[in-house]
Image (cartoon, rainbow, N blue to C red):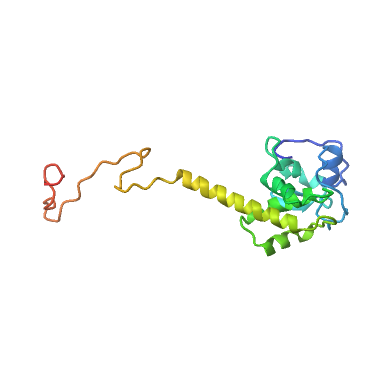
Amino acid sequence: MNGIDRPVTDAWIGESLLYVLRERLGLAGAKDGCSQGECGACSVQVDGRLVASCLVPAATTAGSEVRTVEGLAENGVPSDVQCALAASGAVQCGFCVPGMAMTVHDLLEGNHAPSELETRKALCGNLCRCSGYRGVLDAVDEVVKARAAAAEAAEAAYAPADDAEGAAPPDTARIPHQAGPSDPTGHAPHDQDPHTGGSA
């Protein structure tokens, strides 16, 4: 459960994963919106796959890696998706947002730069009754741009600096000049000293 073993021994075999998350483990992020897998408010990942936890028997997830909205934060710091959803005004009553955040995370793990149509298709299983979806679409766009900018900055930071003279960058080991191979007659090329391999 979010990277930590959380044994559950007192659950009835018919309990849903959503019920166990909320009532047995105290993880109230996933919401019970419809109990029919239609609203997306209870979305979590099981072994990397997005599921409606209200439809998943908890017993079938024994030994699986489950990630909930609580597991998106690192060291108590909300993820970039969570921050973008808040900044874009996608959060109003907040009931659907945990499921939205899980869906967006799942989308971006498989598609680093989704089009708006692809984002809309991914969100078609998440119902929102108050804020609409414009803020969510804007949040996805902002996360994609921010991640692309961060990747470019990291690449530039590690790229070797170009030198006009062709010299190796200061932090790169220098490779000494090697003499070229001799010609088929066994003699060194005419522009090199046969004894040193350097220029004659």
